[in-house]
Image (cartoon, rainbow, N blue to C red; front, side, top):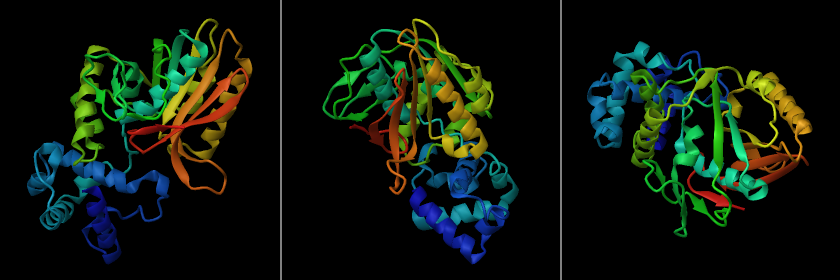
Length: 328
């Protein structure tokens, strides 16, 4: 649906239509700023709030059915009639708290417990959005070959999560601390917060909406705190701990950091690695668009850096929303 819709948006921008009017001022925005997803999320938010008129009839997330011609006409009508409402969310980065990415992150955490055993895990996440992936150990995962892991009664079930030899023999991670952070944290205990994370899920991807609803139910039972802080400040405050495995992870947020902050985070990670010991190991686990070599194309890779030792391994490849994650 979004592939069809956004291709039409691009044509309309070139033609100087209603989309060009709404997106005026964003013509030179860099690709990583994801203006297309900002637009899609803002319109979806109006649909979810029942403020989009006839367009709702074509959005599966509210029971509609996408019809390319009629849906596009209704989309254009909304942008023509309510341009200011659509523009309201264009200046904010997409808050895609995609719980499917936990398929990759948990596979990486299992690789760590396979190495370090049943050490308690101190988990810190930067770019957490609403912090739903901090609950990854409470999700249920089903691999393509029929194996499964995680609580059997979890309201979040990631079918087809893993392909290949994810180390399911490893101890299930024992998270004793979990800390989230974001420059614009989303509080899913509020109606506005739930609307935000729902609006950025693609409207026709029903399975993603189902697992989001499950994650929101878990968050209501076991709230996670996401503090308002920049990534570099969080890493500066982080330290290793004797008798525990300290893990810093993040997923599809690196592109939103300015180059200077990326450098600060990188320097902080290296300092934490230098302080790590066999009694206080440290790991940096991330799922980001990454190049295997300087000349290769970007892929969504799960990468693990661990100390002591400072090893770096590509553990798996996946799609932007985490499922399936193919172990390497």
